[in-house]
Length: 197
Image (cartoon, rainbow, N blue to C red; front, side):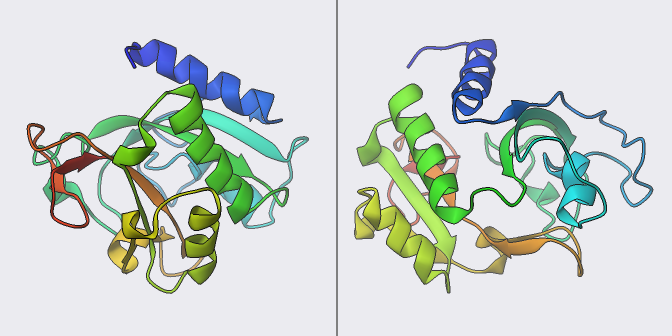
């Protein structure tokens, strides 16, 4: 695949619009209506009140390209800035969101289909990480054809998403693409090659 960042953003938005998502503009980098955050640090920040049941939207699916600043948090990974090619202080988070519409099975299917069919990443170079107790995610990844040898169970730091001690949280999955030993980065879950999310 040889696409510009602009092309990738457009493809992401277009794919999820075709799946019934509303394209929502990036919220400001400095949150305007959330005194609990100094900076926007996740794509879901602008939807936090929806997830907490404090407001509703006219749509049940959203897709965004959110400007974010890595500045700490519950699972602080500031120490990784500059160490890997995937940790930056400023980045854009491409996200798709469901407000009571679909859940894990469709989220997994959408992510896999976008990366393998639309972007064209090789299925044989993909690794999946899941939360160590998430048997449902394990089953769903296998159902779409991922080899069990490429599914790795991880702990809270890597695969349990939460922003604070209270509020929205839960197990998550990540897709990793092995770029080979010539690309510096994190070791793949089996210690072979390097990976980038």
